[in-house]
Image (cartoon, rainbow over the protein chains, first blue to last red):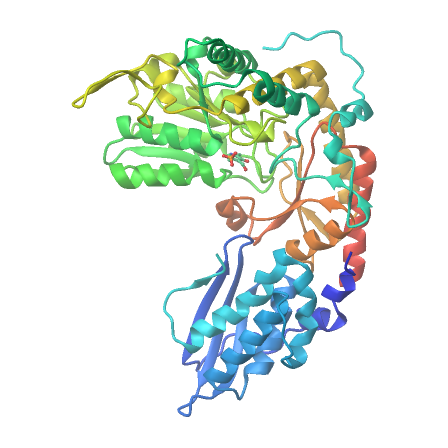
Length: 147
Length: 413
Ligand SMILES: Cc1ncc(COP(=O)(O)O)c(C=O)c1O
């Protein structure tokens, strides 16, 4: 049996209580919505991507569990200053880790979410913000869903 | 219409022996199964009946002249009679075996709905409905040009009967509502609702999925035109459900699916259809499933549905009182008349997180929107946690639930 504290680390509670970069970005030039139809979670990602293709600002709004809120909050911190390609690479590595795949990639702060790998029902909570920001970067019009 | 024998003292420990699945550990803790509204467990008697059928009697029904086919047919039809008695229907012809409540509601919407609905007509549902009693009506309304209207609930989760009555107009053709809400546990005044609908000339469809495991049902007393149940929520197997329909309506309706068993004669140009209930049972049915459902009904009758209801009522009262002592907890759905469901939210903890933490304590509850998104929107919550009780649950298990909730609150604060 895995320890619940591996999933709910203190950092996760911290981000859940005080999510970073939370709210609407008025001058955003990228925006996407994501849904998890199974649990009703909903998230909107706002971004400012400059002419050089670099993410200058990211924010999120919505409702979700501690895992998805913390994942979104940490994600916004990680994405600032990155290009679309870099963002995609981080997501790939993160995805590999939370789905229990083999990876030696350094995922930095996102490591606190690695406990999710022992909770298959919660993986979508952790990845929804990422799928959504992916859609924002790529300016997909359809809302993203986890299903 | 059950015959009540002398009220045998209800013995939950004895009941639990019939459900060996309950006797296990989950995450190192004794399992506390409180997700019965999603699906209940099956007693050994049901498993045994299905096993015996496969072991001794299986063949296709209504086809062969050989002995096994006759035995299978007898067992299948015997199950139909048990369902007929359980629901208080007038005749076996009114009992259609389907795959689930979902298929049953789709059958009614497709066959009866398509037959009667014209552009400008209305179908009335309620905000308490499970998606399976919403979406089939949306589909048929789209196809026919009819309009879907909905009745609201008050803050307690009770239907607004005045609004219901006002929405029954001369355009309304069908009113569809559940007997018991899966998300809140509200017991709706179905007899009164049917009466009001009939006064307005409106046909009634009652979704009894959540009523069957908890209440004595008598469709003739309720007076409804259709009533739907699903086997796996009433201690029977998955894959089997029932549509009850008044014979005259079923006679008038076109078949839902075409195929074997439902025909009288087929030529390449045209077919004539079999008599009820076969007309609505195209293809090889779930024979073992129907036998399992019959065994589940026998089991409930043996325990006594009144005994089950009384035990569950006591559990619900106890759980409601205990939950009420937790400051951060808010119960969603506080109707006066409720069956076996405690739906709640906890300040500062998303239901999903709560579900994971409770699972760690061995407690299985459902978290999410319970296939009732319009209702979640109505109460302005994204989701709830739902503990739902069955005859085999105990007061001790509720204590485990409550202490697990307290643990979660402590962890999050
Ligand atoms: C009130 C109600 N109606 C219909 C259904 C659908 O039942 P099934 O999935 O067995 O078709 C459910 C199941 O969750 C329910 O609770």
